[in-house]
Structures are given as structure tokens and as C-alpha cells.
Length: 198
Image 1 (tube, rainbow, N blue to C red):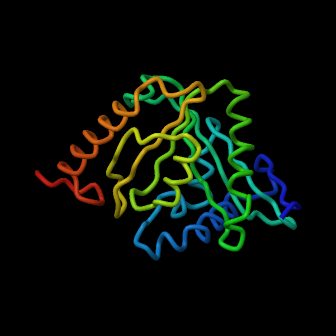
Image 2 (cartoon, helix red, strand yellow; image 1 turned 90 degrees about the vertical axis):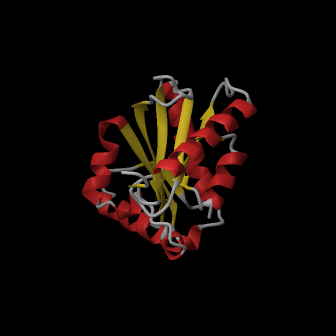
């Protein structure tokens, strides 16, 4: 697949096309009961999500989008970022027929070079707790479990973060903070962010 080109999303690629790739790429997740937020957003909603605070990147093969990746810059108030600007990764997807190739990693490298030029030192990403494949990929890239949440979907989510200059916290401290947050979230909410106690 050496003919695949990784570029910043050009104007001729529509946000509806990005939506279509996300929807197709996450079909197996839906079959497993993991209803991911981003594939369910319309093209207009995706454009508004990325807005001026982020960038979207695409993998192009034979004039068609076969993979996507994006980030949003935001001030993160969670414990591991202490109000710093964080690059929040999202829209990671590769069409099923291109999964297992280097498309995912090529998109990641391209996005990371862009982030490095901006001088951003912390990256994070959330994914479904049951999405073990994504978590394994993130762990291999140096990410750590840092937080836990109950989005309005049918599953719990984990938040994983990576620091370009190395994590300033010990592995034990990160694991402890993650475990405490998981305990509190599961105590307060059922999947779907339904409160257990009213």
C-alpha cells in the first residue's frame, strides 16, 4: 500500500465522507455493542467538533479516503494535565479492507509530527473500556491509563494519556488515580450515564 498518501484534510474531502469512513470502520465495534460517539455524528457535527481548535488528517488511496485521524487542542482540567493545553485525539479510523496495513500508524506519525511542531507536550484519547485493541495500540505507543468516565453511550470509557517528555507521575500513582476514578464513576453511574442514586 505504498500508494497511500497521508495529508491534512483538503477542501475536496467532505466531512460527510469522513463520517462515512468512521461509520464503516467502526461497524465491528457496533456489532459488539460498543456504540462509539464519533461515528454517530453527522458531517456537520464532525466539522463543528474539530472547528478551528483542531486538525483532521486523511489517508488517500486512488482518490478515496481510506482512513482518518484528528486532534482538538483544549485546556484540560483533569488531574494529569493541571490546566495545560492537551491534544485530544479523535476520529481514528481505517476502513476494514485497509486495517492491518500501515495506514493507522502512518496517520499517527503524521499527526504526531504536526503536534510536535506546535510544541504540545500532552496527548490524550478516550475509548470504550471494551475496546481492547485500541488500548493495546495506545499502550505500545507509551500511553497510560489516567481517567475513567461514563459517557451517555452504552459503555464506560477509559482515558489514556502520553507525555512527550515522559510521564511526570509514577506508574503506581497513575494506576491509583485511575482505579479511584473508576470506582467512583461505577458507584455513581450505570452505563449510559444513568445515576444509580437519585
